[in-house]
Every structure is written in structure tokens, then in C-alpha cells.
Length: 516
Image (cartoon, rainbow, N blue to C red):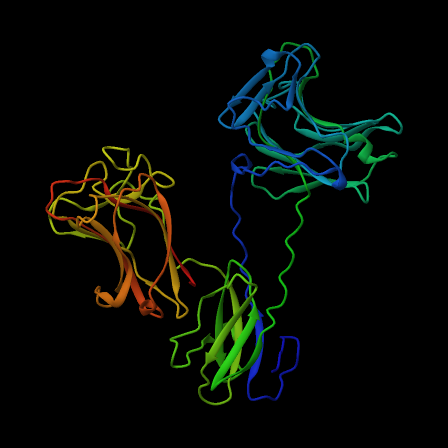
């Protein structure tokens, strides 16, 4: 057995084994934080004892853990997943306050909000401050954003100093911007990092370090607060803030870099056995070449004459993958394991389509007896589902009505290639048919892409019947006959000539992924 990595020199061996990794840059996704649900937790006393929380303000009313302070009329309440509050000309400020438990460990405090109106055009605007505060036994610390669009970090320490830690800085906001503020505090160093982000721009570090004469931790241990404050008592427009999201919890540790694949090889009868470290969410190719004149990234998946190719091998889930009895072909040969991001072979949720429109490459056919597969929005008519399994639309037989007697209708997917190692079909299913043993049934079979005929031994599921009364999630391995083949899946529904008819067969969230 010989293990070799890319930094070594090329050994003079008949077989050269190495592990390489392909990384793909993740595409940035624009996602409003108020749509992210994070679990609330309580860190135990042994860990530092602070009450963590996540609030998406999806209502209908404010959580009872908050205190509402200031004029109650200035608390506008929850609308469309955000908590609204404004300011008043009385000098009190309008506040929501929440306890953090009195003791604290390292933490992340983050908030996302939209202000409109706030700056307005010209001077003085709304003459408002948005204040995001943390309080401890010795004082408080706050990030203040004023209606001139300037941000500052301020502290008041009864046993130390007071004043701005970071002076007023124009951060370039306009009314309606989505603003995110983050404070990361490290109890071991008693330092913090303050970051702001506007819409989907890159985050900007506003402050890093300590910056005060006393302990930072003494100013942030008791409670946290949002305040709208009118700093001029003149008659001007009220500022309004909509708080989308607020989270206090553990600092998000950066994802640990993946360890080496550590490919190893050994004899296995007349063939070879390959073993390597694998990760969930990745797939692997065993690639091969007879020369090192080209990069392993360009090598083709290996074909030993038994398996069509060793391609798109899913992670085993145990942390280790093994290929056994891999045949040896030809002259001395080089091998590599290539790690790739997981990609579904087929995926469709029907939600990007208009009603009655099939996905590209999909086909519907029937025998002309009045039943056909459709894409649409079910509404609970008769015994059909009241909604799609997720999203708005799904595929089903005669959406909005029942199937007919003597029906034979098929829905066939676009073409995809099943890796030699196999694949798994996952989908959501709603079934409502005449009671068994009547012959009103659904089925799923694998078709050859070349002939559009069922593969021999290509059945995935037969005799799908009954009354589910709700959507169910199904996961089924594709038959071995499909391995290494270009195929299509066919969802089929047939009924007998009995007049007892019901909703039939519905599917949603169809996906096929490598591995079984």
C-alpha cells in the first residue's frame, strides 16, 4: 500500500495513488434574516449562564420576555414578520428590553432592521436616533445610528470612562435599507468585534478590540435593548424602525477545513480495494490515467469493464468510503479520488411553473378516457389535497377533480444518468383511490432514455393505492438495472371501469440523488 499527496515527488511505482479535492465557490444567496429560524437555548451555569434567544417577530404579538417602555402608542406592534416602533417628542424614548440573565459568556448579538422614514431628504430629517444597547452592572454600551446616517459606538462605565469608542461615521444608508449589526464578544480576551452590513453588501468591521479602561464584560451582562429616541423636541416627522430579526447566542465558529481525503489501496482478490475519508454532502469520482502529462482534474472516471464508471459515488455517512474488487485493466495506471459538491441528478418542485405547464423535458400522456397528469394548485375539492406538499403547485391527476373510470395516464421525467453506484428517488406523495383490491393504482418505473420502454427489472414501486389523507415523504432506491444508464422515470396511474373514483395520485418535490 502506498499513500501519496500532491506535495510529494512522483514515485517510481507501477501504480500511483493520490487524493485530490475540487472546491467550488458557493454562490452568494440573498436571504432575509427574518426568514431564518434558529433554536432558542439556555446556556447552563457551568457554561456562563446567559439566556439566549432568537426572534423573527412572526407574532402575532411580542414575546412576553420583552418589556415595552416609553409611550405605548409608539409601540406599533408586529406586521409582516417585523416589530415596528416609532419615537415621540417627550424625551422618554420608545424601547423594547430583554434580560440576558446577569452572567454572560462569549456571545454573538445580532439584529436586522429597516428604517423608513428615518433620514428623509434635507436637514433635519426625523431628528431621530436608533439605539441598540447592552447593559451591565457598571454601565452600558450602545451602537447609535442617527438620522444623518452616522453610526457611533458609545459606552458609559461607572467605574471607568465614558464616551465614544468609535466616532460618528457616515455609513451611507438611505431610507428602506436593510441594516444588520453584529457584536461578537470574547470573554477570554474581553474584546469584541462590531460589524455592520447594508442590504447584501459585504460586512464592514466598525470596531475591533477593547477600547475602554474597564472590562467590556461589565457593561453587557444584564439586559439588551432597542430604542427609538427623538433627540430634538421640535415638530418633525416621526422615525419608524421595523426590527426583522434579533438573535443572542453563541459565536458562530468558522467551519473547520476538511481533512485530507487519505486515499489508501490494497489487493482484493484479483482486483483492488480503495478506501478514503468522505464527507456528507459530497460525491466522489474514481478517476484514472496512464500518464501524468495532464492534471488529475481532467482524468475520466475509471471503467474496469464491469462497472460502467466509478462516478458520483455518494458519501457513505460513516466518514469512510470503500470500493471493493475494482478490476485492473491495461498497463501501469494512475488513480485519483476527486471530491465534488453534491449535485442532484434530477430535481423538480413544480413551483417555477404556471398552472398546467410541465417542466422542460417532462411529458404527460394518457389513453383519452378523461384522466391526465397536470401541474397546478390543489384546493381540497372532493378528496384531493388542500395544498401542495410545499410551495404552491404540484403534479397530480385531474387537479380540481377526480380521476375517471378506465384511466391510464403517465407522467415521464426528463432524461438523467444514473451513476454506476446507483441512485435514490425521493418525493412527496398523496394517494386517494378506490379501496383494494380494486385496480385503481399508481406505479413508478424506470424507462430507457433510448427506447422510452421500461427497463427489464426496472420497477421502482408498484400497486401504490389506498387513502393517505395527507402528503407522505417517500424514499426508494432505483433498481440495479438502472445503474450506469441514461433513463427517465415514469409515474403512472390506472383505474378500472368501476364508477367509484377519487382524487388519485399526486406527487411533489421529486429528486434523484447519487447513492443508495
